[in-house]
Length: 278
Image (cartoon, rainbow, N blue to C red):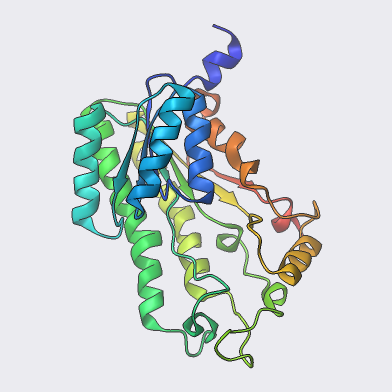
């Protein structure tokens, strides 16, 4: 076995990815499957998760399943954990990727600014971004401890969990319902994503003696056919002069999931095109 195989080989490992059928989650799934891992795609969209699972099995000769779950629901997460144990008997990798992020093309409620921002949206962010991350980590760690597995947990944050949003890049985005209102990146996203950083440190310190590593990956904005002026303003703000491609985080995910990062825990790996270096 070559040194690269030794460092990055995930053969027979089991990886659970929340939001696994989404833009980045599906990339993470393909990357870990290519390294030999069996994949559990946790997503609200059962059909999309099932389709991706079949593609992974065909392309990488691994086992993959789709599991429908609302990660803010303790019952759903509990059932997901039971399915993982029944199907695979273990879990080695958890990527807490699912998140609520009020999009710039959403309904008028996302354009209300801080003073009038709806409590319901704040609570939805807390439910998915924090409670969901808590529940998934709790259930997967319980299985890791039960099976004496030295696992890797990767919590996904955001540059907006490290620095405040630059609201200037959204200035050209207007509400479809009321053109007098411009988009303001909501407070809940930054708040919950910053909380992820210390949640990671807490778990890393608590489970280090069990060999369970817990790290944060902090990505920046990913190009997904956003409004032209937003992309232009974003690229001016990024030292590398572009938004991330969806594939740009695959190397970091493989690094954090594999033995290549075997002495790394409690850390925050920032992959942001230089966004936070200003």
